[in-house]
Length: 468
Ligand code: ZN
Image 1 (cartoon, rainbow, N blue to C red):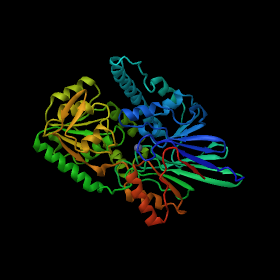
Image 2: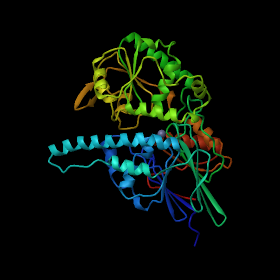
Image 3: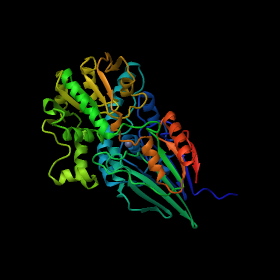
Image 4: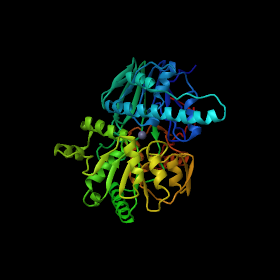
């Protein structure tokens, strides 16, 4: 009988799509979960979140999370609700961000359930309950254990873990799990989400050199981003045009990463872009909290951001920036038809305050909407980017006359060249499974991996099993 594999990886989420990251590693009689993310999108996706995990939550021994984006950690409280009691390993900054992200996620879940129940009541159906609440979030946070970059730790006898910087958002890591049994060793590297090189604030991703299997994200496996410099110039040109048009500018942005980067660029180009003629609003209490987490972990900043801080300059501060926390103040912005740059979540317009701003501004031809991040299938953001001429919002059909701009180059994800470069640092050309990408993206990346490195990638389907 052949010996049982040292490691068995089961792909439970983000197989052929970019949300719901979740992979189960069985090794030396332990079950370790890599990420436990929320599947994002519309109603169908919401139903998939509530359905079973496909494994017994109580049987998981430990969880390792790559970073604090909700599509990587958003089902942790559900895992806890369903019986998981083990440790959750993450970097210190990820833990600080996870608190903000999960508390927000719980309140979104409550709002979703409330809305769903209004429909159900109208149809005479039984009510539903939220996916999880603040209590499960608190239980989850208590299980979190901090592990800094570059400090290997023993997870269980024979299994060790380490994090390296992934350059994606503050605290984001690539994860290595290594198992040793009777002198035999196998290692798995999970890329998490890999950031591009040469972005502000964060260091470039730290390369990995050795693995037996790499789970590699492929969000932008089929394209090359414009350079940061060209992108920032594009941002300036759009703002300049918008200023002459006289409308408002809406920037749907994730609270973590993108919002901070936008503020960073606005601060850097404040005079050049005549930003004193605008009123700038960060209408996201969450993004404001995230800024303080960034400030607390300034030791993770790259050279330029660190130098700004040493010179006493806050890389996120603008003279005319107002941080909006109050709902009333946010609603008051709806009465203003011009002169405002509003940065608000959520990044894919699936929830949050941006939806109110869209409702009031979409029909105006002099509104400019700047999409600065990935828009997943099924989201309102994706519909707008794809050119919908009307959308449904708050039960109304809203015509879309606003100008839409996709600024792909501000991505927090590496492009095809960046992913190939990251893989290229592995000296032994390990097997690679492409995850966290739609099929078109991973097929394109697979083709490049074959041409450049002679490796044929696996494109696992949901529930696929890979033995090591
Ligand atoms: Zn991410």
